[in-house]
Amino acid sequence: MRLQSNLGSVQYGGRADLNNGGMLSLAKVVKVYEREQTVDVVLIGSAYMGDNYETSGKISCFQLERYSGFDDKYQSVYGDITPLAPGQTVVIGYIDALKGKPIILGTLPSIDNARKHAPRMNVGGEVFNEREERMTSTRLQDFSYMNASGEFEKGSNTRAFFVGKKEKMSDHREDDFRWDDLTPKNKFSYKTIGVDKELYDYEPFNYLLVTKNRYEDDEKTNYNRFYHDAAKGITRVSRDKEDKLFMMQLDDEDNFEVVSQRDTPKKKRRPDEPVIYEHRTLRRSDDDIVYPKDERNIPSYIDSKKYSKVKIAADGEITVTYREDDCATKVTIGKDGVDVKTTESLNVKSMKSISMIAPSISIVEADPGITVSDIVEEE
Image (cartoon, rainbow, N blue to C red; front, side, top):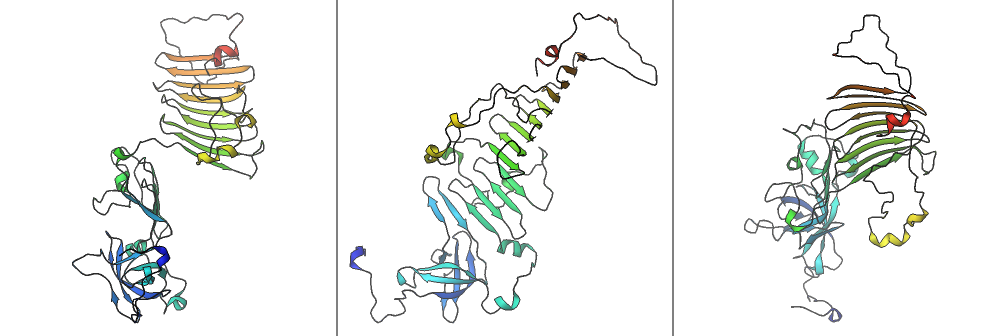
């Protein structure tokens, strides 16, 4: 039977046990059905309210969550998930004031022992960790999980993840900690939860972590940045102060660089990096309130004249460069041997003999000599 809203609700004359408007009950959890996300309870001072062996939890009590839902397209449950355990005290309300439609509104500490035994002690053990675990998931099954010991896992639908735990984890390719090792599992397949890649368009996430030493964003602020371009594999860690920059970078061509600039906090742009990036929040509707790009402080081309640089190229060649204004030195070690270029004196000091073995040795007096541009033109 379906009634229109203006016709009111069904009233059960003489059946006060079915007409429970505004009534709440306390109950003890006695059984948990993990796959159905339901529980059986015993009402305190009253009767048993639960399932039977034939229906396996399909008609037992559901728990009310702050935020939850089910997405038909991705066939996934999302929102807050707070597992219950036998012995917990719960508060029960009734949908449409019917005892046949109970719903758990929340949990309470033991009414008898809450004050006597507070604060709760860390009893340790697996039971404790499971009882206190917390988990939140999105429609695409991005999740955040934490147990009672503070160990945590954050997983993305792109299969990127961040884990913090007490035990050692391996990052070796042959036995590394992988996606399948994460805790939140599908209750039927027993695989780490996630959406089938065929159901959505995969795009790798880019990451930027920024910390700083003061609230303001100005020239006096010191920044520490971690940047990762997932598509190109570029990973960069940098620290910049008012007039200094330290940076380590692995680029998309597998070149590794360590750079220390002593005259500017701004890094030189790579050839593939745009001069102006698109700036927006995670909501496209906020575009109108984000600063227009012509109002931003777009830095000019950076040409540092005081820096030290170590570069290990993809083919293994090692280059060490030092520059101080009009003085520059570069040492290259690679398959063609050792090459030294410098605008300054080349001094070799030794307490022992110096041997030079080569088919031929030639010394040519440079005129007018090597310049800084000859050394750093490829920098």
